[in-house]
Length: 390
Image (cartoon, rainbow, N blue to C red; front, side, top):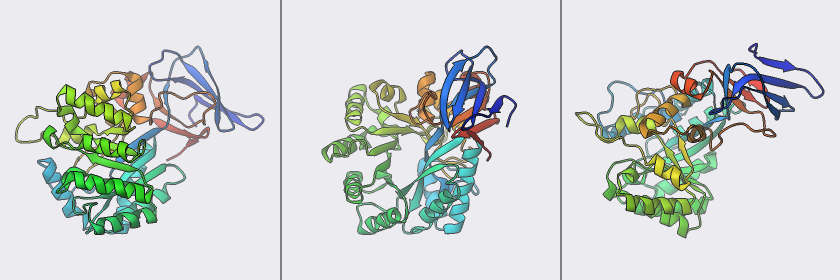
C-alpha cells in the first residue's frame, strides 16, 4: 500500500486515505473508512497527491472485437462495418473470451470497475461472441461489474424470426440487454418496432446504436423516443452515438431532445470512434461527428462518455482508458464543466460522499486539470475500503 494510504486498526478495522482532492475542489482531504464505507471526509492541511473519483464506469465497449485489428485501417464508417463483418466469422468462443478478457484487464488497470459491452450476434458468430464475452465477464467477476448486451449486427435484422430466436437465446445464456443499430437495416423503423416488442416480451432493456451517421433526413431517433413513450418503456432504453441529432436544425433538435427527456432515455456519446470515423474521407473532416452534448446536458438528459472500440476496425487505437476517452470528449465537445465530465464516466456521480460504500479510484495528481492533462498511469482502485491489485 502506498505510504500516503495509511491503514489503521481499531474495532472492526478501518483505514485513512490521506492527501486527496475531489474534482473541482481546492480542499485537501482525508477519508476515514470503516466497515467498508466512507465514515467521514475531513479537510486537512497538506498538499494533494491524489485525485479521488467515484468508480469509473465504461458504459459502451465492444470487448469481443478488441485488439483484433489486422492489416489496413478503415477509410469510412461503411468500410469499418464491412471489415468487422468479415472478421466475426474467424473466431470461436474461446478466442472471443481472450479478446474480451484482455479488454477487461486493460480497463481495470486504468481504474475502471464497471463495463457494459456489446457482444456480436449474427448468422456467422451465432452465440460464440456472447458466450465468450460472458466467460470473460465471469473471469473478472471478483473485480468488475460487467453487463453484456446481445448486439444484433447488420446481418441479423431484429425484425426477422431468426434474429428473435438468437436474441432470446443470448438473453437466456446471460446477456442482460438487447442491442442493435437500426440505421443498418433495410427499414430502420420496422426494426425499432421489433426491438421494442422484444424488450417487452423478454423484459430486457435496450441499448441501441442510434443514428451513427450525419444525415439528419435519415434520423429515426424521434421515432424511437415516441415508441418508448407509447409503450411505457421510459427509463429502459439507452441511445448510443446519436451523431445525426447534432445535424438537425435547432427547432427540430430541441423537439426531439424534449422527447428523449420524457422517455428517460440515457445518451452515450462515443468521442473516440465518432471523431475518428464520422465525416471521414479523402480530405480534412469538417464535421465533428459527436452528438449535441451541451444541448442534451442543458435539457437534463443523462449523458455519458464511453470508450466504444479498442484497436479494432472502427477505432485502431486506444487502451480502454476512460481518462483518454474523457479527454477526447472534453476536446471534441468543448466541454469544460468538471462536474459534467466526471459524471460522464462515473455513471452520474461527481464525487464520493460520506455513508457510501468506500469504492473509489485514486489517480496520482494534484487536481482534475492535472490528471486530465497527463492521464497518469499510477492509479489505485479501492473496493469496500481495500486497495485492489490488478
